[in-house]
Picture 1 (cartoon, rainbow, N blue to C red):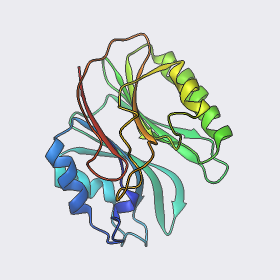
Picture 2 (tube, rainbow, N blue to C red):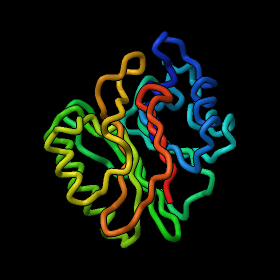
Picture 3 (cartoon, rainbow, N blue to C red):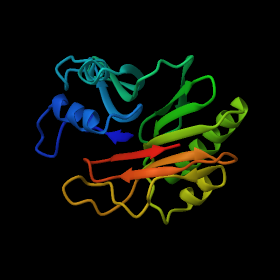
Picture 4 (cartoon, one colour):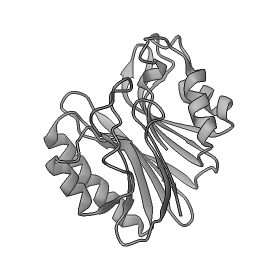
Length: 213
């Protein structure tokens, strides 16, 4: 699952992690890549959001700060059923603000999560960097994220040189109340076979879930 959680705030402006946890529990994923996550910030009442979501969902929490924010950190996170062998934080460029990626290594595969920049140049740089990193492992990989690019953008073509799109790019993911664009995706590293048995995008803003084999 890929889920931009807007620091826990819904379209009504209310901070409510239980609503987010309920979406996750309903789908029972093995892995959730989360974007726009607060950790110990004043804005989010000092809560370590991914740790709290881990408690609510029974999953293991992992966090990577992209920037310091209001006494804590702001970035991306992951919830997993199985603890990875190793966890790596990969800094990525962003002209408006630094970006990052989480790299979770398992015995036979990798899981990446990211939230790319608002600028095309930084997104292209990030895509090239991510491809170099993932290919060095020599394992199949999935990457989830809010990529801030639409299906017709040139960055999607660049991404497609190294990755196979597994999510349905015709299913809109943003904004939550009236989604009219697709900017959230799940990809699999090229050179390996993937089978998508179910795909759901209308769960919540920026939320895309696939069942793969």
